[in-house]
Amino acid sequence: MKNIPTVAIIGRPNVGKSSLLNKIVGRRHAIVDPTPGVTRDRNYAIAEWNGRRFFVIDTGGLDPDNKTPVQQAITEQVEFALNESETLILLLDSQTGLHGDDEAILNLLRKKQLGKNLFVAVNKLDNPDKEDALFEFYSLGIEKIYPLSAFHGHGVADLLDEIVEKFPRNVTPTDEEELIPKGRIALVGKPNVGKSSLFNKLLGQTRSIVDDVPGTTRDSINFSIERSGKVYPFVDTAGLRRPARNKGSIELFSVFRTLETIRQSDIAIFLLDASSNEITEQDKRIAARIIEAASGCLIVWNKWDLPEKTPRLWDEFFKKTREELPLFDFAPVVAVSAKTGRRVNELFDVIDKIKENGQKRLTNRRLSEILYEAVTIQPPPSFQGRALRLSNLRQIEHSSILFKVTCSEPKGLHFSYQRFILNLIRKECPFEGWPIRLVVERPNKTENKK
Image (cartoon, rainbow, N blue to C red; front, side, top):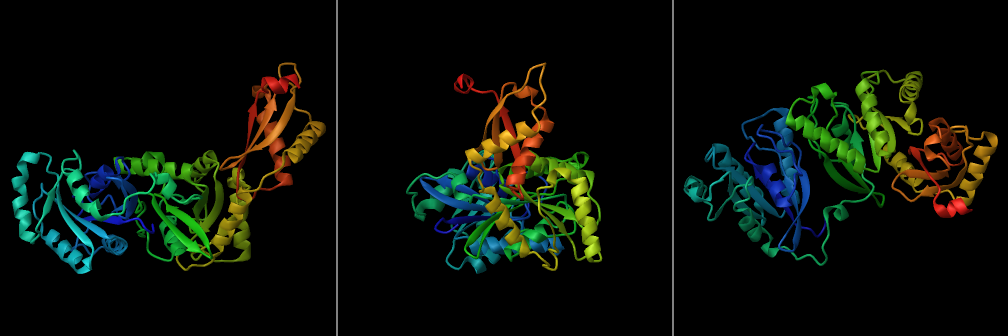
């Protein structure tokens, strides 16, 4: 995030902070719902206005009188956002009017301002002709207040014009994907398996809110750290519940964001709960999503501090993992305790090894030898009375491990024979941490002439 200005949106719950972030960004980046407290962690997005690029942080709603652990964690997240930002937007709500907490939050921002630019905006003025609703907010002692409607967009442009006036202009246009580091590592699992606790332990700071209530994290949280000269772009995701339990729009959008994150990540850290001593059907559903994404994978049994730790017990867990998740025979299996930090640092070495394995390539010559070995040892079964001809086994340049082979009748090559070929490839190069796939295609006209 260096050299790019950062703007934080602060305010009480349900004043429209996430709606304003979405309007600034120009798409639905944050979860929006009329239920107070939907945003809990701080949520980053890239925005551009008048040729100037900047980060926007959507923060959880501040409630000074609420002393619950979750609210205290939200307040801590807001503190982080204040420290990271050069510009602050205090967002107020015209529909509820001036609230006592608004003044308390403003006083907090004034103490934390320390040379930062502070803008006060009043949201939900859907009718621009009714700006007389602003009068009571001037009692806060603010010289200029910005009326706007994050939902309709009224007034947002005027606010952004003022905010970006002193920001540096972009030298070249850049989209959000270019600013997000490659090789993202997603923490994936059911609610309450300890994803956020592990995320925070890996980062060395409280970046995600941790609470014993399942589903505390509702949006995907991105954060990169540098360790020993290497960058690790971690993503904490919302827990994936059983389909029948995804009842509300918040839950459904959280699930959508998590599935999208899995598809866009290079490596998935798949968390299982060692305290439950089982792999549930929901765990297996999540495993299927990771396989579909063809991303690298590391299986982590978290909460290893809770059961009695013995070598024999670990052997039982390892065996259970291989038996109940047979499609993950390629994935390393590790036991950690995010709570105590036990073996957490070892995950970086495993991640490095998976990344290294993902870069390995087999030469066309060696793959031709492997294919010759396959058809010699066990020719493919015939299809509709005709022998199948296989040729041109190649590794495709791809973010995952992908191979292609041509076949005279692609639909006739049984999946068991495809698996036979892949097993021979793994025998040559295990690609530990990665699923490998085979695409079967019909020969083109040039290959047929040969």
